[in-house]
Image 1 (tube, rainbow, N blue to C red):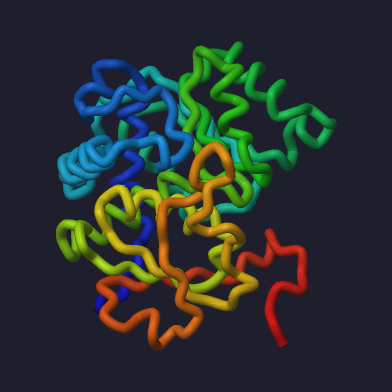
Image 2: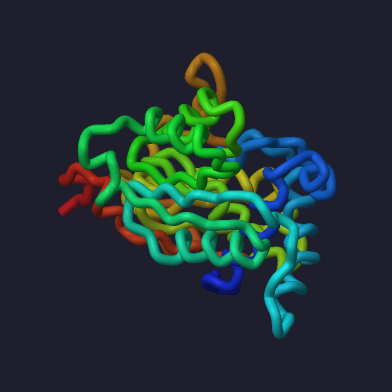
Amino acid sequence: MTLLLSGPGMVITLMVDVESNVMGSENVNAAGTNRKHILDVDVLSEDEIINILDQTDAMSEVLRRDIKKVPALRGRVIVTLFYEASTRTRISFEEAGKILSADVINMSSSGSSVDKGESLLNTGLTLQAMGVDVIVLRHPYSGAPNLLAKHLPKVSIINAGDGLHAHPTQALLDAYTVRSKLGSLKGMKIVIVGDVLHSRVARSAIWAFTKLGAEIVLSGPNTLMPVGLNLVDGRANVLPPVSVQPDLDEAIRGADVVMALRLQNERQNGGICPL
């Protein structure tokens, strides 16, 4: 069993790849995907995920240079639009954009027209009118990136975390880290421990790991597990098939990777931990 911790450097490597992929057809095709937006992992195929990870291997060479700069996104404008606090994700996106020679503008809800009551959609439409090419969005409400993707035809949207829903770039990073350290994920047992119910990272990671062939086991108090696991809601599975084992010792027996989640206090309504 190996315990892995992904640092900001790995985030930079992955963001170099993802941001270049969504910018235009020539970059998208180079990575083997044809997607304008990165909204979640569940819509990506296994081949697309593998292509992204392969391209990340290639782009990581840039980070070993004395001068970490390439002209891939010269003349492009990227806005990091964060409605929630962030250190690693935000800095990683900013550094990746600058390494790719893009003009990066950091914008938070505090101190902007959001304080005057401007809606997310109006903010997005304003940025589109100003000629922004990419919006990297973190938002407390699930589905916010999808809203902008639907209404901003000239802008690519990258989801940097939306409510309880998804954090696709973190999941791709985690998959990249596991593959870099341990090789193919096929047949691996990956245990996710902690507050799965409130974790957007866990949801996206479950999709990414499963698509790459891993077996997923969730462990934690029942009150921290999602409701309706492995059930069909009449339209689609909420998550791919997983196992749940409340006993931690039993859960990690024979595990290849253990992913530990903190309590998501900012997204809890209280009363979820048994006494």
